[in-house]
Length: 227
Image (cartoon, rainbow, N blue to C red; front, side, top):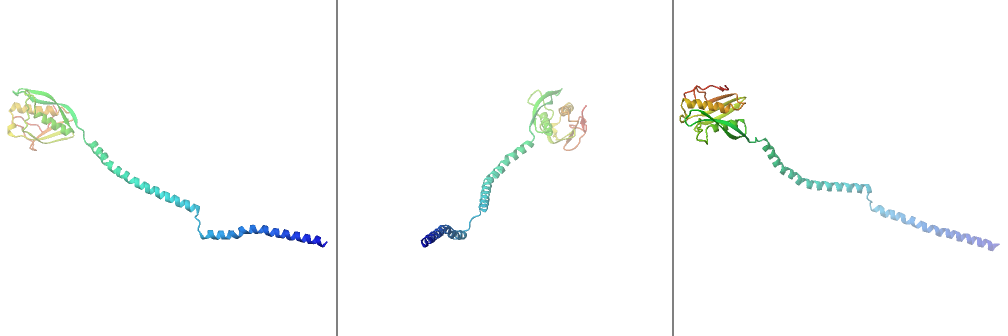
């Protein structure tokens, strides 16, 4: 009987020893865990969200810096190309030259009759057109067509306003003609300028003044109007 109890006690002791040995391995991780946690606590860990935000901010700064660098030459290029555009705007406002065939009037070498001729002129505006017409009356490339308005006559100014055309001339005595020549000269002036529909009246001044006669033979109207 004592032997039986002894065997039972020995078995219980072995079981208790075995149970104690089985708990020791489990305790080992528990012992090392604080040490590991303590070690990790000494080294601050980065917050994943904070790190991601920092990376995004840094990337945005890099992109902005890159865009700033590339935008600078683009702006410079834009400023550089502005000059041709401005030049185009200026050229667009400039009046383009026009051409027209007009009638001019001369006389024959004997000053017996008035002769009609045509000439192509180039002009930029209405007043320039009238100036070219007056200059055309002073020149002729045809020996059979004599100008009645001498090149010695100077056109001081020309003004067109609401259908009224005003010419101011300076005429030396050498440019005077006889009674027949003066009549033809005024008739040539009327026919030349009244061919333009917009011209309703024609005022001829000599050195800025109205005169009774251009060359002393024929009365000068102020202003001359269409017949």
